Image (cartoon, rainbow, N blue to C red; front, side, top):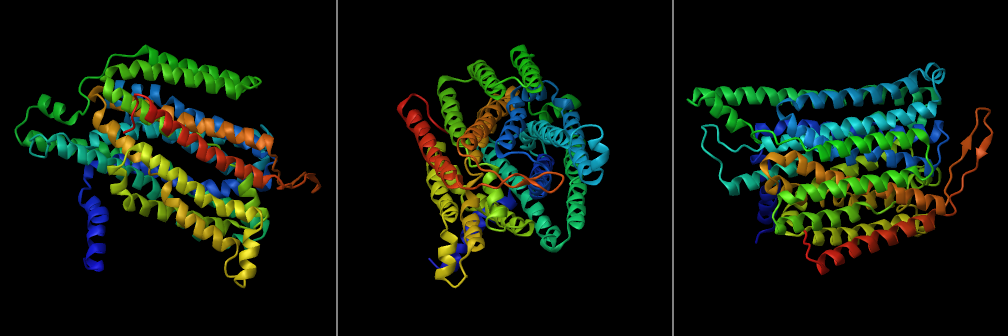
Length: 542
């Protein structure tokens, strides 16, 4: 075959076809997902703010990361709540937008009115509050967006004729793929914005750098606006479609049945709502009470609650799809629960390799663009392979692509720079590694989301999305716990100075190499153990 024709055919199948399948009804949830992607606008600035102005250890930040990921395990009661208040779920998006706004406003206050906030509470306490408010807002919005993807796929054409099952299944896959595209597309936008905004940061005096950080957070106020506009667009589209169907001669009751994807709300499941409320109360009490091993207690309790609620919910499914659901959830859970090296690696990039905000922004842009490209590149791969196969492939690829970072800790970049006359230095290796590794991150989730959208009971779509999200996002809390343990075993510290400019904590990156190696070993062993278990039992993966 002609190479140009082959390339054109690939572009048509993987890029243009997705564009042709786009529908106006997909836009409302996609706008909420875009807002989630745009949330990364402050990530780089936040990293430098913590490193330069707060004396928080890598272990503390990993622990904070645990608490910040914990709200995502509440997606199950939130999902059931969305099913119960389906017609009013837009109000939850407004609530999430308010929490996100509060988080951003706190950071604006920390950067622009530091002393005023310090007079009320310690700066570290304000930062922790901001770090916890944002994920609560995002999890509320994400839960609603997941439910919106279900009603975004129409069951009836514009003239009222039913959409056949095969076409609806294809549209669900398209919708979930576009959802990942929207999230990553948002990250591409903010990565490009960071490249532009932070390009002069290395050459600015500290006062102007602080003003630049402040402007980035002020710009982030657009994030909740995007999600609210998405909901308003959804309401307008529903009004338009209802008017069109009424003009075609359908009665109001028929129009309502055609446009309401879930029919009558399900009965209230007090196990789910009560369990979620109990979990939230216990989590807050343990967190505020500073209970010893509090994170472990909360993780064990949340895991027990989620597993119990999953058991009750999966009784809605026949045995075969139930085994598929459990096997899929287990493999993805373990894959996402692998601990990482933590913030110490980022600090070493900054201190040891001299990576400034501008360069890290360029790395982020490269990663976001290629992740988006990877969704198109691996679209058929995701559709045709099982989750177990995909996770195994991602595990091997991710491990191999992490080896250059471990090599740089031991001087690989110095050797390559000497051998190439400075051409292949630390920044070159980082760019190439980011370019190769980035497309792998989002691939495992799309087939599972499409399977849920197509296979879950109609009345419980949001609940099933939330169940899987609670379980697999609880894996991120497990990952943060593992990261905390690794950072307690292999201590990595950055230089911290007190107000007088004296060094209170010296920099020490001597154990960073073994820390990375330990995370790489766990990253191979744990996923393949989960895959082997699923293969050896009655469970299967989607």
